[in-house]
Length: 184
Image (cartoon, helix red, strand yellow):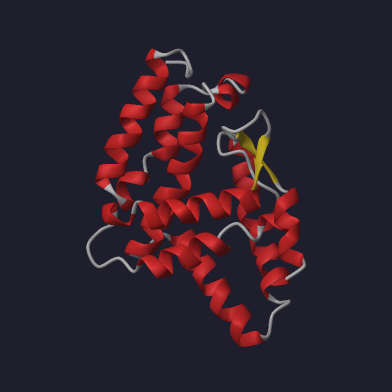
């Protein structure tokens, strides 16, 4: 349990809306889990929201060791899978075997995006930072020279989890361009 506290020290690139500072993984995990509760009606019919919530709680634990790769950094993204697998071996290995295997299986399911639950969880995991970037006037996007084409590409898999949320995300991206928060 103390190992999980380290997630509070893993900084992400996006800023929080309450003050001008970067979000950490623990805050992201809580926030995106709340997205699942509030936006459950936009999941495909039959989606097990409890399973989505557990996936969202465990999906970034590996970043305690692997760090958070900036989603628009292709080099960092290419290195991330190996780093995360090694982190999963260590961190989930700290638990009793049955518990560790169960939680790691949820992490692997999330990563594979083969089930409706994993696709919806992954959609929410992309929607949350998109929303934060928009409501901080695109500060992280502008700081790193991110373009609307990059944002559309990185977030396109939202559609696999929820067409409705993808329509919302596309409108948000278009509005961000119109307002100058995001380079066209």
